[in-house]
Amino acid sequence: MICREATQAISQSFDSKLPRLKRLDLAIHTMLCISCRRFQRQMVELHQNFEKLGDEVTSDIMFELPVISRERMTAELKQLPNSAD
Image 1 (cartoon, one colour):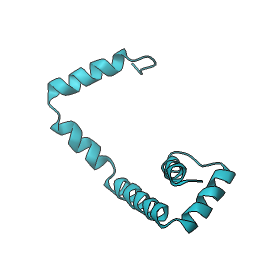
Image 2 (cartoon, one colour):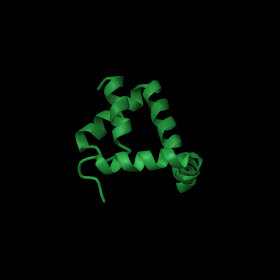
Image 3 (cartoon, rainbow, N blue to C red):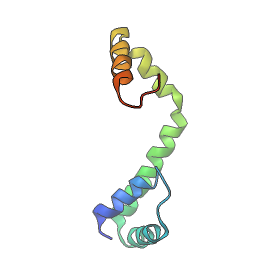
Image 4 (tube, rainbow, N blue to C red):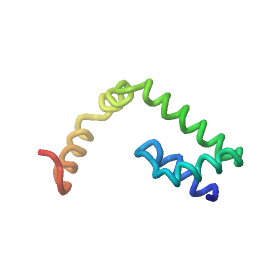
């Protein structure tokens, strides 16, 4: 596994469980590569910090948006295929 593949695998691991072989390759790579090990540690910290913030960030952002922007975004989202009405 090269560093590019390792960073992609690290990012993917937050969205879904990696296949066993990919997890093993990543574990071996991060044992040997200090840069990817640092990237993995930073991603874990970032993920944990976002979890701590929770919905506060989302609600604060939505209140900062002007009403017209929220309405425009809502209208555009409703036009997307498979949108929930």
